[in-house]
Image 1 (cartoon, one colour):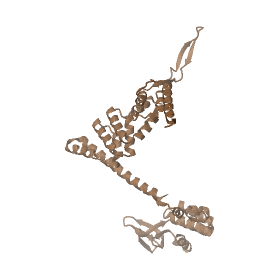
Image 2 (cartoon, helix red, strand yellow):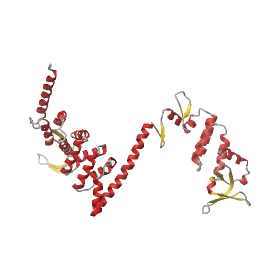
Image 3 (cartoon, one colour):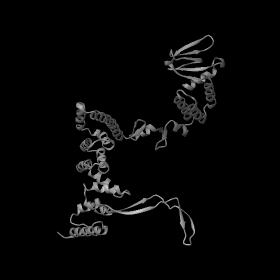
Image 4 (cartoon, one colour):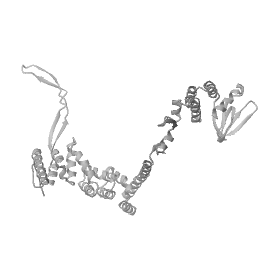
Length: 396
């Protein structure tokens, strides 16, 4: 063992000690070390007459004489004291540059050999106490719980399988991002190869390509033809990535043709996510968001959301305007003059009517129109609900 080998050096004459070369497979040679990197050899001058050549492939490490002597002194001092062995392990972690973990672990093991209840050394060696109060390896405890180790993390086998699938999916998704970028560059150049690239893009049917297509739709500066192609492709992938992209297009895209195409795809798949997102936007402090959300919701009118629509008929919006001039000349009623400091930033509150929301209400109740009168709409739906409840209470 490393420490036992080091202890044997205590009996060597000081004149013979220099750097120590530890050899793979066991053994060591002490003397003045000269490295010949070009020849991949270490030359150890044992004394004035004897030198030993050792292939660097067989050299485990070289310890300087000063550090080695300090280590040997510490070994002699530590003896069978568990606390000193623990401290020596910490010293090795800081001062031993090669094979550090082996030295640290060895002295931690000596610490718990001399004191089996040494909690710090136990913790350093990854021990924990089980339900019976016995020290066991943390790895053994986790295995007893049915966990497995994956890339340094303990998890249930089912979770590991899911993560493995996700990792593979992420790799394939990244490949698609590169491939779609390549095809677009070819398509832009035109010609026969450009036509082939467009045909290849149109034929994409792998759901793992959703992230690549969504990236082009949301971030790419493409013409209407390509945008419609991206929407069409995403419509084939009934997954969360494609739905999220189409939902965002429904309110962010400036081209109404593309917006409508996205809404048509969401009507086929993803309407629940679309409605949840747009309803939340009706409470936005930005009136533009409210108008865009209501416009998008017109593709999914739902009577059960009547109260939500009513609340968004007229919305309150607060804006902070610029402050007045920093300093103004003023005069009093008595003819005196003076300087006045400028006003504070103006806070303006506005109540804005939202026509697309009114359109939503008319879509679910085409025979009535109370305009932007929230109270009238509320009374109407309350009465309608009451009539429906009365019908349910009647005996058949």
